[in-house]
Amino acid sequence: MYHRFIVLCFLAFLFVCGAFAQADSLNVRHHWTLDGRTGYNLAMADDTTLWFVEPGTDNLIEVDASNPDAIDTNFYDMDSLMYRVLGIVNDSMLLVGYGQNIRTINIRANPPSLVSSYQSSHLVGGLYLRDSMLVSRDRAYPDSCLAFFNVSDPTNIDTFATGINATIYADIWGDRLPYYMSFAARDSILYLIVDKDYGWSGDPYEYCWPANFISIFNISDYSNPVFDTTYPGYMGWFTAEPVQDCPSIVVDSFLYVGMNHDECAAVCYDISDPTQLSYLGLVGSYFEGVGCMAYQNGYLYAGTRIYNISSSPTGDSLVGFMYDGYFSKNEVVNGRYIYRLSSNFDILDFYEYLQVYEPSQRQPQYEHQFYLSPNPANKYSYIRFNEPVIGEIEIYNIRGQKMMQRSVVSQNLFYPLDLSEYSPGLYLVSVRVDIKRFVGKLLVIG
Image (cartoon, rainbow, N blue to C red; front, side):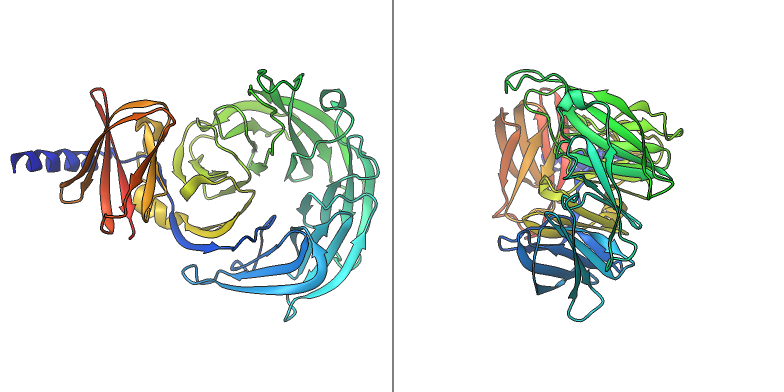
């Protein structure tokens, strides 16, 4: 009895002092298995309707997410091959790409109808859509060139400009623009971001030096985009070929570039003067694939992790991560919900997460040495350490009863937890390393 009293006092002290201020996994409101289907790029209309295509097929998929607890799905055979969603124009026309073709689908029709198909020798499926401008690598001029298209009338697409020079750093990556690239824009300035190795020989065991290269364009006149310069940005290190996606986003006067090398989530640049970039620093302190970037209400979404940048544009301000941390290029952030598409379709409730988990004074996650994923969990979860651990794991229920005690020697940074015999509820996971003890919350949902 005395021992139980001591445990309860210890746990109460941790709650009061905010010792559980680690970053927790977001609450999954809906999880839909796609039965082998997947897609590239989500597009949202009316704040509740999501569209994507099944690559290399005729299938257009509509997701009604107005009720996140019970989504409705419709499948349409468009009798026309599609590869990826490019975006929505005028809130009524969905643009999809396949090779040198752009197809326009009227999503206001019932059922959606194929309106037009545009083909261009300059088009490579399309890369970036902003208002009435679509930007693509230029197939006809592959040597570091871009093509711009006018899609203000999706039924009659025009070519704005072709063969637009994209960079003066062709000697770094060869003659052609790499496949991995992204765009971001602020006012009349367009940024093309490429993350590429610098002087890598091809040896997979060699340390190579990947770097950002950011080309700047003036697009005040869409029909006449003008290449300005290329800024050589942050240079890191990696032990394998670092040609990766480099998603990017502009937030106020800052440009964030997602990293897939080094132990950070993103690189931040000051673009107060949009043509004179200034490196500010790194966001995050953990390497994990960053497939997409988004922002709203002071929070930066970088791949599977979420950072509070309301008080500082850089630094390790991790506040949450998306459950089961899979790499995804397809996310839409809208209001309180995050919609993710990979081999599954998930809706995550971020605002509910903030109300429950984020205290006013949050400590960085890695002061706790570990996190739990998935969390909430069903039959299993994993303790994920940020370094090899020799110690002891204990699990308590909310009444202070010890459910498990086990010594652990973790070399692979992952330790499985079998929850099949646990009743639904909140549990406390304690990890003792030497004389230090770290505690986290685990919600079992049955």
